[in-house]
Image (cartoon, rainbow over all chains, first blue to last red; front, side):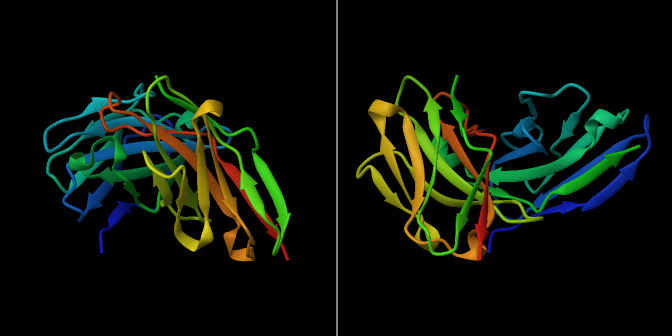
Length: 115
Length: 114
């Protein structure tokens, strides 16, 4: 069965520290996405990727970098974490061949707290 | 650009009652529409999706949604809810020019009272 996994599941970081959130998918999907979820804002897209080596900015990219070293892996990097980045982060994958009708498959989320 | 409005942040219903969760989208062309569900401490899962054909589309677990183009709506319905349906429901829209992006509403939290 298709699967998207995220690590760590929970993370506590200090302000100014570097945080890396990792995502792995076994769906063999070209497209991968990073969202954050905050109360009252639903899901907001941070970065996405069309395949290995590509990253694109989403709606709220400031303060975040992304890396797609392989088809399976997509990382979100917070170089200088701030308390405003405390949130739940979701990774998702999608089949590029499905076009705009393609379902996205989500990981279980990472709860990040920046103190 | 596409957008979605879910006007109800929280809906409470009794077990066995019928349910409608409202969704309105904004897009001038033909939209691709989705409903996702998020159970506590989990990621989102697809309930159903619609692009064309019969405007009433069936999903998993007895859910269905109706596309009404004249009203730009895609409301989710269920005839009889169960306590296990308690979750957050997201309406979403995509389009041919959206680079495979999906735009999500803010979600509606459904609470089913026993």
